Length: 101
Image (cartoon, rainbow, N blue to C red; front, side):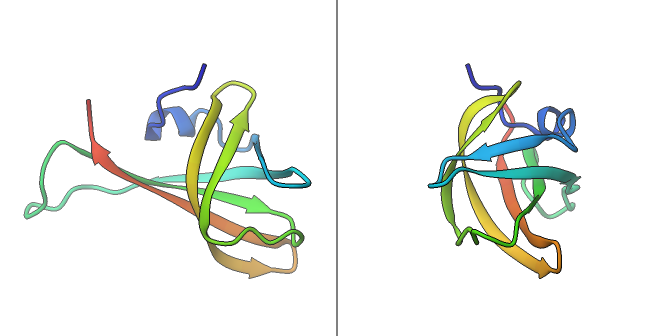
């Protein structure tokens, strides 16, 4: 069963591996969860945060939706965007912006 994808839930799993269902499968490490505060002129009741992942130099994951699996969070889909490349590989970001339940 999948967890609810909240800032608090992702924060519990920083520095753990997530498996991305591509061929061959790729492991990404969740390295940071960054919350965003609402501004006075923005709608209230929103959850806004980003989850940042580090991945290998190959294969490169293009901007699109991927199926993820995590030992404790279960299976879910994330829209992933590559944001940086360095000598260690690629950094990816998943942005969340939704009404809290």
